[in-house]
Amino acid sequence: MAETILEVKDFGIEFHDHDRPERVVEHVNFTLQKGEILGIVGESGSGKSMSALAIAGLLPRKKLKKEGQILFLGEDLMTMERHKLRCLQGDEISMIFQEPMTALNPTMKIGKQVEEALRIHHPEISAEERKKRALTWLKNVEMDDPERVYEAYPHELSGGMRQRVMIAAAMVGNPQLLIADECTTALDVTVQAQIIRLLLEINKTEQVSVLFISHDLSLIRQISHRVIVMQLGHIVEQGDVEQIFNHPQEEYTKKLIAAIPQVEL
Ligand SMILES: Nc1ncnc2c1ncn2[C@@H]1O[C@H](COP(=O)(O)OP(=O)(O)O)[C@@H](O)[C@H]1O
Ligand SMILES: [Mg+2]
Image (tube, rainbow, N blue to C red; front, side, top):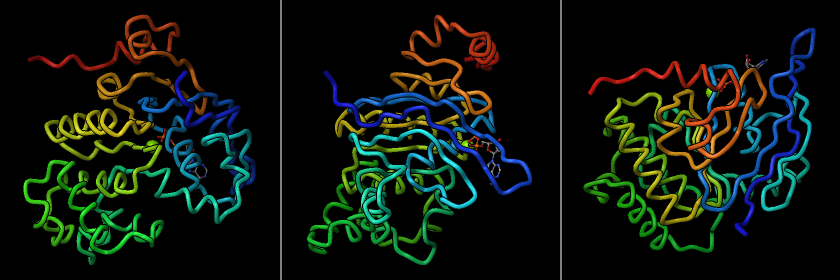
């Protein structure tokens, strides 16, 4: 039996910052096993990012009501003490976003940013060892010259390199769960393919569980072991990638698949 990393039970979110409360996510149920890549796909506004942020513990507690349970290694993130949650964030659970330029600090060298999770969560690790691990991860994300990148600033790198830096920074602390929200959406197709290949490789070698979120069905198909289809805050359908794409059960899924652009080669 595989180890369950994440178990989301009857999860829901309701916003309370307008006159009427607005339900944005409802009745979300799924599990993620160790080493598994779970793709979440759905149109814009279907609640993917809200769910991801909730799982990463990054949703503000004000103005919003949450329901259900998010069990990470059996412990509920929704009721966990703040300081304990903060210990998990960026360490056991890490996240990569769409736009690395906004996530990276423009005035800080890349190396220091890659090391950050270690500096915050593992003060027992020496500066020398931190640098060694940062360089290893810069190499793992296929930087030709890790030493140079270590000393560089974000603006000196291309978009694809910055996204790979974010992956290195997310992985350096050896997380159990990596959440990638539209992490290739801003990149061109060739770079996108490189990032996907890299994530697949890292998933295999590190056995990290990945929650891969995208509106792009072709990407979801390439990377996922299992897929969740979301629409308007609900799960429409979930199953193995092969089943979802070859034998979709729901009309909505069938329509989404039929709408995938057929690229002429
Ligand atoms: N601050 C907010 N107040 C009210 N509704 C919001 C807020 N932020 C997002 N939403 C709504 O939550 C829903 C889900 O958004 P989101 O999770 O970002 O979708 P996705 O990532 O799938 O595109 C959307 O309908 C959006 O309008
Ligand atoms: Mg989103």
